[in-house]
Each structure stands twice: as C-alpha cells, then as structure tokens.
Length: 287
Ligand code: FE
Ligand code: FE
Image (cartoon, rainbow, N blue to C red; front, top):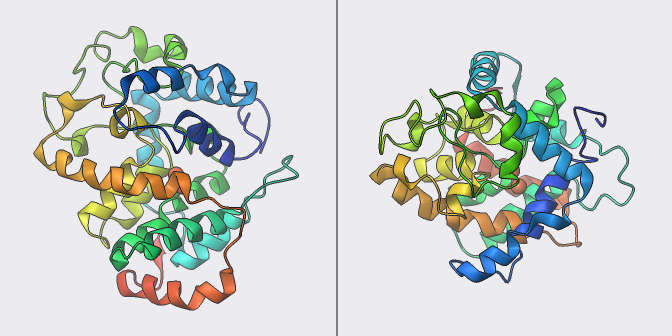
C-alpha cells in the first residue's frame, strides 16, 4: 500500500490528521481558535505528501473518469457485513501499533450514536459510513479514496487544507474552472456539484436507494470539511442543503471523537447489527 502514489502508512493517517486539525475542545465558530488550528505545520511529511498528491490530481477530468468507472456499481455483489470484513483485510503495512481495525472504528462510531438514543437509521450510518474505503481493495491509490473533499469545476476555496498545493492542479489555471462558480449555477444545490472523488461519493451511490436522505447526506459529505466545518461554498447550496448541513454536523463528532482504545467486542455486537442492516438493506447489494 505504500510507495510514491500511497504515502500514508495507513488510511487512518488522514483521519488522525483531521483530529489534529479539529481537536475535540475546539469551540465551533470561534474564529481565533480556528485560525490557530489552521497552522498546519505539524502534519507529518507523509500526510503532507498525501494532500499534495490529492490536490494535484483531483481534476474534473479525473472525477468524470472515476464516476464512469465505479458508479455503474459493477465490481461486486456482497452484503454490508461482507464489505466490512472485506475492508478489514486492508492491513496497514508499516504501522506496528495500529490502533483500531476498520470494523472497530465503524462499530465504535455506531455504538456512540446508539448510546445517545438516536434512531436506527442514524446508528446504521455510523456503521457503514466508511465502507467506501473498499475502493482501496480495487487497487485505487489513497488519494482517490480518502482526504478532505472539495468541489472540482470551480475555484478551490482557500479554507481547504494545504490550499497552496492546488497550484499544481491543471484545473487551477483553467478559466472554465477557476472562477467562483466555475461550471455551476448560483445556489444550484450540492447534489449538482461534483465533489472530489473518494469513499464518500462512492458509498453514497452504493446506498442511495436504501436510506433516508439525512443519512445519505451524512455519508456523502462527511469528509467535506471545507463546507461543514469551515463554512465555505455557501454560494452553491440550495435550501435543502441547509437542512442537510445540520445532520452532517450532528454526525461529525461521532466519527471524529468516538475513537477509544477499548476495542468493541465484534462478535458480541454482530447479531444486533446484522438485524439492523437487514431492516434497511437486501442481503446482497451492488458495489
Ligand atoms: Fe470517512
Ligand atoms: Fe470514519
């Protein structure tokens, strides 16, 4: 998994870096604190390298190619639980003290949502939100799977982490794509905006027939930090997106702050979650 195209030792390196940028005690909306945390100097070199690869290569053209390749969902048919086990085979090469397996992160997120008494569909979102990372197992490089997401086809907002690395993106100098609206209309709605390709957009498409729209928004936008945590791209939102933003914000802390060193008991929890999955999904779905 490592190498020039895959600088992260583990996909979790990106998640850990998000946690560094958005520590739990950060007061939402506190501009001064936000500025302080926006000094990204501390990210390790391999994480910086990852952002550079992502920003250089997430173009309109690449995004269209990825959508054409993956969104027909012709790669596999498998159940949600099979996908969880498949994702768990993603072994993190050189990280000897890898904290949590992928299944453990999913279960911890779901259990935290359940403990707060949220409805079943919301608990299920916690369980499945990262399953799009199976893209890695189809040999996709890390920069096509994870990372903060952002719209392509219009100007890259300055709030995106390591914004300066967009200079190397071919779309950066393209007048069709580098204005405020680019290829989009004002307030066209995020559903009409192409976000950079990764596990969010893929998983949204895998699930879109089966889940309520609030849950689908949580999956589709959970890595869209410039939007849900930095307040950018308001000019592309429609009224529906404003409602969905509240749900995405509600989900975010469960993803970021539910990690504990106390691993959940997978086999003990499995019957409950298999039943929950069966409430919403057929046995096998298309991936
Ligand atoms: Fe994720
Ligand atoms: Fe996650």
